[in-house]
Length: 316
Image (tube, rainbow, N blue to C red; front, side, top):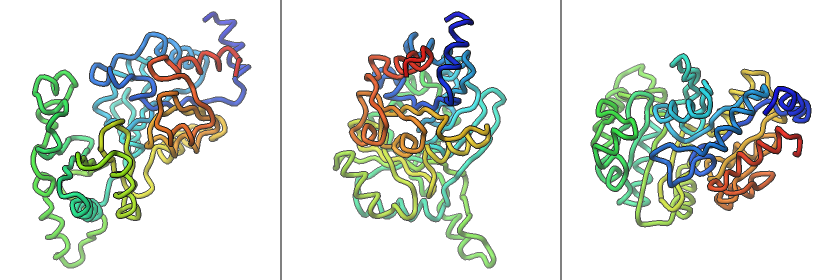
């Protein structure tokens, strides 16, 4: 794109100041999740948007540790919104900007309730430093094989394998409750958990989501983002991608009407509703498509890139 056409693009875009995009299933095909291979067309579109003076931010369920490579591919984006809005992190300076951790008491209460709903459910927990995983949770995932873990950039030092009650030292919470004057409501045991995950093979994803939301929705935010897998992601109450994006936008004096957002799964719904203009890719979950203003082509067809190209060309 020439300097002249870039200038024309900026003027034609009018109020758009920020592009916010989910990653998996939106700009990165689920078939390429492990490799992190984003199409050249999508990379070019994001870089063209940045060259036109538009801020670009990734808003994802992924933890920070899985984002540096993708950010570099798209042009060293710098700040990312990770863990479904719980973490805002500057990759360029390796600096935490904001973190919304789960209250430990709520975490274990919710874990117990989910276990009552489905005794076969297994759990994992993400922190900025570690990934806590129970053995049943790890089976069948990329973490099951050491070679695949290394390929994904996950070090052995980051993993904490075993029941969450043990690796997160639930006994420490009990002891705090028995200590006069202790603030149990703000207690975080051995790690500040930013996302609790639970998985089952006994229910379909949407059924599992509905049942857990009904039981614990007043304690934690519940969503899911993995198509065809009954894997739930739980954050602190009120934490979601929209909240994280709104915080980021406010920090840059950007109004929601100036934001264009892209997504594909239920964990994108709040963000798609919040943004001034939103697009679900054609391969998106039906609820994500319903939440968005428009539907783009599928992820495999570079739907997000197509929209950005049209925005820059003044065709939207």
